[in-house]
Amino acid sequence: MIRDFKAQIFCRENNLSKREIDTADPVWIERIDAFFQRTSILPPEGDPTEYAAAFEAVYPEPRHRRQYIDDAISKGTPCFGHKVLGGLIADGKVDCVFTTNFDPLIEESALSANATLPVAAQIRPTVAAIDSSDRAMRCLNEADWPLVAKLHGDYQSITIKNAGSELEQQDVRMRRVLVEAGKRFGMVFVGYSGRDASIMEALNSILADQSPFPNGLYWVTSSAVQVLPGVAEFLERAQLAGVDVSIVECATFDELTADIIKTVDLPRSLFDWVMLGRPAPRLVLVKLPTAEARSFPVLRYSALLIEKMPPNARRITLAAPTTSAAVRELLKERNCKATVAANGRNLAVFGNDQGMLDALASLGARLGGEVALDPAADSWALGLVYDALVRALARRRPLIPRYKRSGHSIVVAAPRDGEEPERTRRNEQVLKRLQDAYGSSLTGTVPGLGFPFQEGVFLKLDQVGGHWWCGFEPFTFVQTPRPTLSEGGNPDDPSAVEQDPMGARSVRGGDPAGDWRRERWAQRYNKNWAGIIDAWAQLLANAGDGSTRAFGFEDGAGVDAVFEVATVTGWSRPAHHHPYFDRSR
Image (cartoon, rainbow, N blue to C red; front, side, top):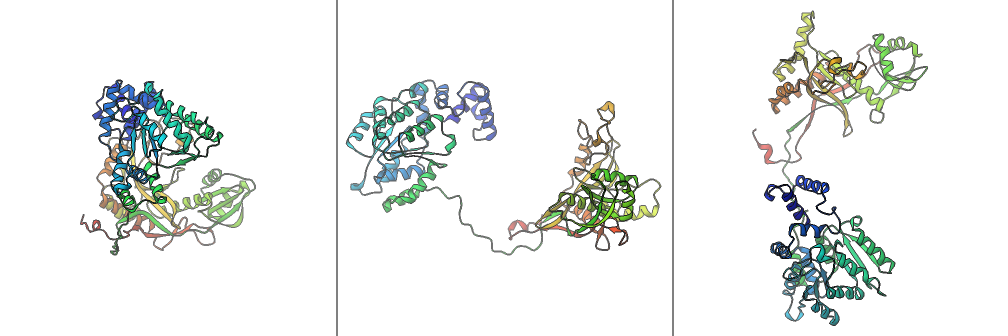
């Protein structure tokens, strides 16, 4: 009701029709909640007066509030919880129910439950509202059970309590019935928020008796941490008064009654009637497929299995600690090709031993045997192997490795001016399968922009299911020029030295070639993608001798990074057969 009232106020204040919003949509719920957080039309969410204030804001006149409740109740039907409660009442296991609801679902459920019993065994409840509270007092004095007492009135009552001013003072006689019941019996509170000051005041007055709630007090809520402060204070006072207090967490009324019915014995006819109202279970038995799965895979991964990884690297010790970046600068100055990872005074290296010693002589470099690599446990080892793998996949192929902190990649090498015809012909032959798969040039310039582009792949080294995989993602790389100072470039920014691997500018303004790239890939559907993935797989994994080496120098010259990469990508196949897989398209 609060949610409905808020939606009506929201529409009224924003000049909207309620047909334009969906109060079950999380987007609209968020908008409505945000609106009331910005305004002071209603008390804050969770405030004890929120319900009454919202009801009165939408329907100021009592007769209109009665009509709203009447309309709402006409749509209601007993739930499973109502039927359980009705069965307990009919069997004499629940004597008295106090409710703040206006609907007749409790008494209707009790009457329906009685109809399943012999006439002589039927126990029909007495219903008393605030305009018939004498009836409730008589039942209490004469122990004429069962009793259903409507604390806020029945939907047919002339007087019902639902606005703030009406809820402030409970009817004196009905209040007396509630207080006297609390002095004589224990009580279970189910789904009650404690928003009504008059009812909470009556409950607190019970604690002044010598033996309040003699059979205990049970407060059932969906969350113990979300009870209102007034309720928490009441429960604390009850404990201090010697009452056996328990807070029971239960998500819904149906779940609570489902647990209760498991421990209560009802006559067979009554139990069967109750269980007919049981909601359909969420978990149901299903027939598992027994047909044999198809052997042909239906999903292809852009990942190559690495059947063998380099187990060791050369260890080089230094006179003083350093960083990987500093070592790479020295190697670059001496034109020494190597892959290195620094770990304090120790280096793990793939490369020529003598070349490394000469390049790092200023650091007091000495050979120190070999170091075992565990990429799964050591991040430095994973980085070293990752760098070496990219170098190995590009070696002896018309490919260029690109090393970035955000992830490495490989791009197709564009023909160079003055390149030997034989080399050009050989490269074209190696790239022919890839060229056919793309159906367009692998290198060139972006029309209208003039920026060079190269087809390539992002590479990723991952361990999945106990195996190492080289994942690759095809992408069109565009070399956009670095911005000048007038365009906002920063000459002191070291990250601007190299182009971004995604081909985007390093300053605001977006990717100038983004639209062209998206258009280039838009028409490539599954068949095209399958061909492109297959062509890249063959290009990257086909090393001729079965092994992929990062350097390829002679044995004994140093420790090379040697990989064995499968030539077939990963596949998946269905766990069982399904008509879906019989489709021709």
